[in-house]
Length: 91
Figure 1 (cartoon, helix red, strand yellow):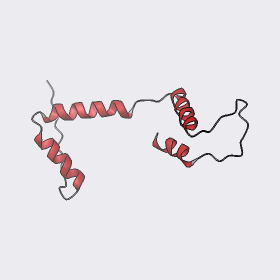
Figure 2 (spheres, one colour):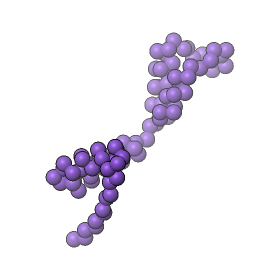
Figure 3 (cartoon, one colour):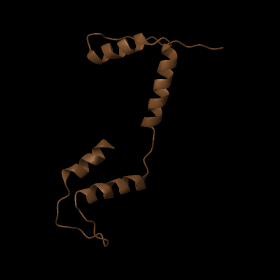
Figure 4 (cartoon, helix red, strand yellow):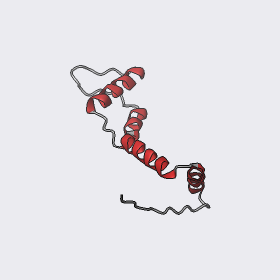
C-alpha cells in the first residue's frame, strides 16, 4: 500500500482558520472527513447547468416580475431590472 501525507497549518489569528481548525480537531477520523468533504464539494462545484435550465429559470423570474417576452423577440422600450443581471452574477 502507498500512503501520502499532507500537513496543514492554521493561522489562529484568522477567524476562518480558527473555525476550520476547531472543526477538524473535533473529528476522530480526520482523513475520512476531509476526503468526504472534498469529494462532495467537488461534485457541487463541477456540476454543469444546462442552457435550457438557465433559460427556464430566467423565464420564471421574468414572469414573477410581470415582464412578458414577445414571441417575435423584438426589442422593447422597458429596461431590464437589475435583479435579472444579479442572477447571472450568481451563476
